[in-house]
Image 1: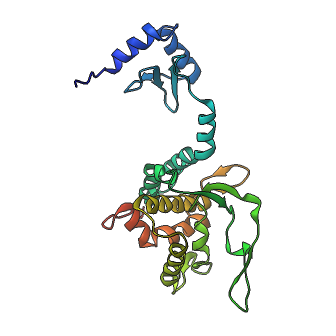
Image 2: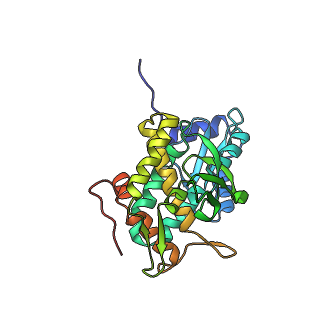
Image 3: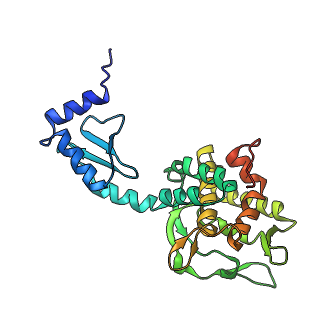
Length: 264
């Protein structure tokens, strides 16, 4: 059976001749006025739509016979939130040494939102001061401070694991891990897998990306009335240096075992 392939221009011509009461020129003028910048045609084009791109946004005109489900769009925004623009902000603002890891997050977000990654209640401030331990038994007594809790893909709050595996040395001005950090980290994941079973590669990557993205969102944004990226010599970025660049697991998992991160 032969397959008929249509060029983008052929699809555009079909859209305006069959499905749209406006002309292509009228749609272009509207899009340019609405976006306030020059626009260009997207490629490829759909069978029942006409799509143009501006500097930061995309506008799509659709045939009445093929409307978008606005509820789906609403749910997509609720699920993905501001992850993409926030990661883009970090890509543009963080020092170059962090860029390979930020790029890894941006390029692999689809694994976080894969249906195989469960959504669950995430603690928004899972730091050591909100984890109550019985000093006599070493057992967990409770977790407090749920004011920032939200429903997110599993892994987003795993930055909290790092807070109990090390500490910030204020004399040295850097993050340091405990000597038993690797053994404790292995124990955590062994216990985790004993409860949930084995993970496939896509799930492994999804949790890794969510965990790394959570670390960036926790420490690479500073709230001072508005969210802003902290300056290079700040406590926050020195903490990220220790938890990300000082830990070979991230370079191995995200950049590759032979990858390197610039220390600029």
